[in-house]
Image (tube, rainbow, N blue to C red):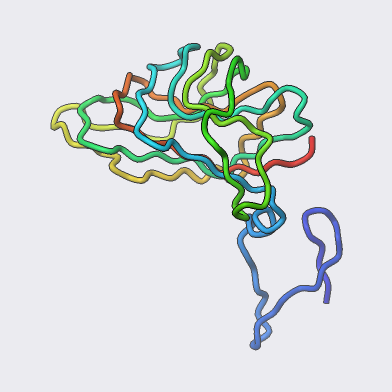
Amino acid sequence: MYGKDSDGTGRPVLVDSGGRLITKSNLIDAAVEGRLFMAANQAAVTTTAALATTWTGLGVGNPTGSGKLLVFHEFGWANTDADDDTGVVGLMIGAIGDMAAAITGRCARWGYATPSAYVDDGATIGTPILVKTCGVLSDGATSTSMTVGPQIVDLKGSIVIPAGYALLSYTGVVETSHLIFHYVWEEIDA
């Protein structure tokens, strides 16, 4: 018995000893084939508030002329200590601006490939637009964090970034050295 993969190639269907179909994560092929990448802040970062063009946090930018699309599967954050700032955590998209490869993105197939994307924790970007709210930081009254975390958002490939743009962390208020963010994305030919 054969089925087709996402590229239309015929492949044998795997079944267990009881004849039940064996399924696997939709990211296994991407990881094994070296097109799945991840990155995280290496220390807590101070963020800018809202839709600032002088942005800080964690972002993944697709360089102009990369020939790739960045397909995002996961975004997450953790709060490193008590936090009494109320605010939203989300994702925004903006022009890549002067983003650089300040943080090393890693291939899920460790050591196999390097990403085309830039990963940065601060840059001057084009005017961003908030595209997804993902959670809140704290209740603002008790100085205790509601998002010690990690908080993980399964994006399921629902955000695709073309060359010249970036997906960037968003906080509604300035967070001073509290948050660490991460992303998991796939790079496919445009």
